[in-house]
Amino acid sequence: GNSRPHVAVTRRLPDPVQSRMAAQFDAELNPQDRRLDRGDLVALMQRSDVLVPALSDRIDADLLAEAGPRLKLIANYGAGVDHINVAAAAERGIHVTNTPGVLTEDTADMTMALIIAVTRRLTEGLAVMQAGQWDGWSPNAFLGGRIGGRKLGILGMGRIGQAVARRAAAFGMEVHYHNRTRLPADCEAKLGLTWWDSLDQMLARTDVISVHVAHTPATFHLLSARRLKLLKPSAVVINTSRGEVIDENALTRMLRAGEIAGAGLDVYEHGHEANPRLRNLSNVVLLPHMGSATVEGRIEMGEKVIRNIAAYAAGETPPDLIQPWTI
Ligand code: 8YV
Image 1: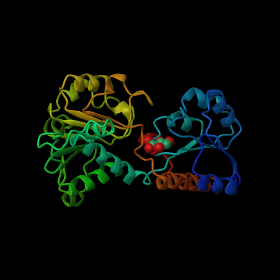
Image 2 (image 1 turned 90 degrees about the horizontal axis):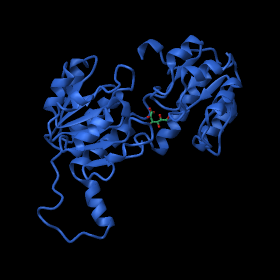
Image 3 (image 1 turned 90 degrees about the vertical axis):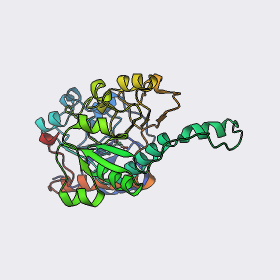
């Protein structure tokens, strides 16, 4: 333990979080939110006991090899740690923590927003109003599909998947799921969940498929071109998890060909760049990774980071320690 560790934060965090960090640790903040390049990151890692990175910092094995012996903890500001090579960090005795739990409800809310936006043609209506092109009510205009009664297939039933299931059940959707492990029977019964051992079979039978698995080597392109072809042509694909889980080129092709009815995406296979051929499709709603973007959530994420660092500094096991073998 080191009671006042040098803590380097790569991005500008909410003011209350930054003040608490400055009060509790020997904190090196980034108040201007200037994007750090690789060289900056290495230098920071070399002079710090703790690094607080975010999704926008790629911490691979090469970077860790250059970090030097001082760095002991990477306290990620975010739940997903796919931008960090956790195994390579473990080999160097560097712990990695994340911020699970505090972005669950916000991400689930955004998932519902995308389901509704796509099935009820929200952005098409918005575009007409913004262009001043509405020519009055018509019984045939902007007809979407009814959410109630539709079959939702949740891929990945962790915290966020379960929060989506609760919301979808309240909207009258029939909720199906595929997960490595089955939920306890009472959990399934409470939400009327249908479990599918076979992802392929679930894909063929659901109307909306929503992705809630982490991006790991095992989930890369889990929704491959072959699996996307199993979907009904009327199906809608929602992703608020990680873009790499879906073969984005295949999805784009199928959306353009009308082989998939629509998509609502908050994340992209190539980081902050959506496939340009996804733009300007009336059946596709694209968001700039806003799933967890609430004022409250960002503060709670910071509080989790602080708790993890404080535990490490006190010589205790941080509450949100990632075990490399679970990835
Ligand atoms: C975060 C996310 O904003 O937490 C996650 O896994 O994807 C985001 O919603 C981001 O990770 C911050 O680093």
